[in-house]
Image 1: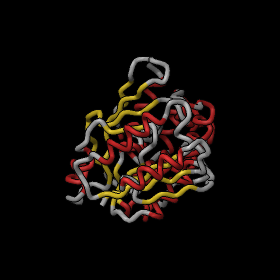
Image 2: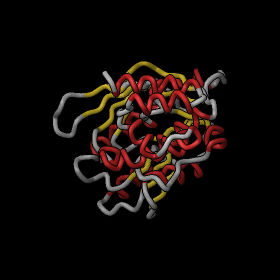
Image 3: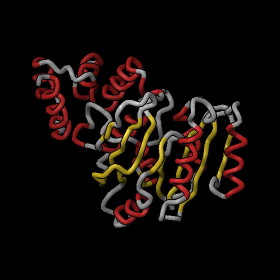
Image 4: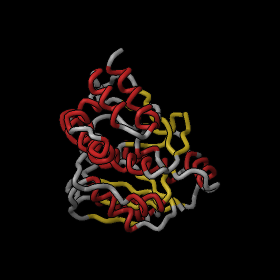
Length: 272
């Protein structure tokens, strides 16, 4: 069974209700039907609860919680702890699937046992009418930026058992930390090179300065400090500002080839 977990807060604001409805339909209409949908509301005050209860009565929401929490990752973890599926999918309220076979196709891959998670490409819709952007998953860039988004990932529960859940000390980058921990633990992903999901742009991760601060810290925590890199080095890696001097330091200190290969891509992008 797949446990779909949706963190939620005040979806009636800013025209977000339309996207929430599309999200609910795209989950309910998946051709893979062995799933449960858990919605973890953070204490909405704008009429959201009444809407959620209507979906619960319809049977589209199997588990509903509404209470104050400490943020997005607290809600995700709360949902994981309350879920029963062997596989976990985190779905935002502003995202919806374009591919209604995605769960089925992912499970065909995951149940063979060779892979621990799936991920895919997505398209981002602008709130301001700008052109759509397609974001492709690419595991090669994982050691300097988020390689794929959690909205496209279906993850075996035993991955969470091994590496832990989302680090609630972060406001933006806990999903990136989880992905790095997962890859460093040797977990294998299968990429669907297709646009399976639509996302609305914006959100917490659009705060550039906060992203730099938190992602730099994630890089430092997960592999930087044990490879002799400073926090400033890790910030330069995230900003794709690797100097020849820092590149030499990386080549001298880092021993894991996949990290070296990933940071070589970063170095090339830093010095086009």
